[in-house]
Length: 194
Figure 1 (tube, rainbow, N blue to C red):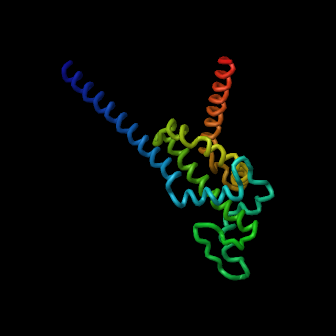
Figure 2: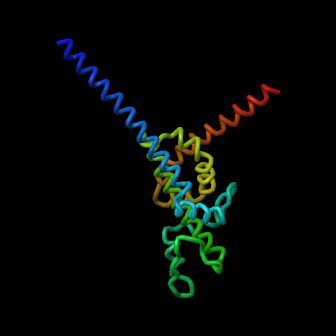
Figure 3: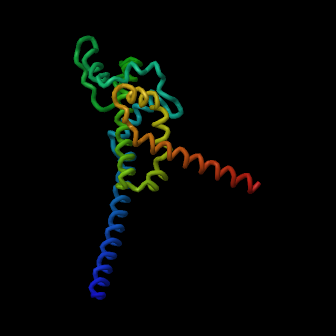
C-alpha cells in the first residue's frame, strides 16, 4: 500500500510541476505577443498616432469634448458631411477635416486602445498574462493613456456602464503605486549616495 501511495504522490507532483512550467511558458508567450502587438501592429500604431495627434502625452481629454464620447459619434461623422457619406479608412483623417472631426476620430481611437488594455488587464487578473513582463515594458504608456482618458472613462461609467474599464482601473492604480515606489527608491538611493 505505501509504495502505491508514493507512486501516486510522485506522479501527482510530476504532473503539477509540468503544469506550472507549461502555464508559466504560456503566460510569458502571450505577454510577449501582446507587447509585440503594441510595437508592430499597423492598426494599433495608427490608433496611437491618431490619439497622440489630438491629445498628446501629459494632457487630459477636456470635459468639453464629452459631446464626442457617444457610441454613435463615428457613425454620425461618417454620414453628416454635407449630406454625403464619408468613408473613413483606418488612417489619417483627410486634411480638410475640422478640429471637431479630428477629435471624434481621436476619441474613437482612444476607445480602441482602452479596450485593448482592458483585455490585457483581464488577462493579468485571470493569470493568463505575465504581469511583471508587461509592467516592465508598457506600464508607463498604459498609465499615461488611462490618465488622458479619465474624463471619458468617468463619462462611460456614469452613463450605463459602471464596470467599464474596471479591470484596467485596478491595474493602473497598482502600477501607479509601483512606479511611484520605484521613483522614491531611486531618489532615496541618490540622496544616500551624495
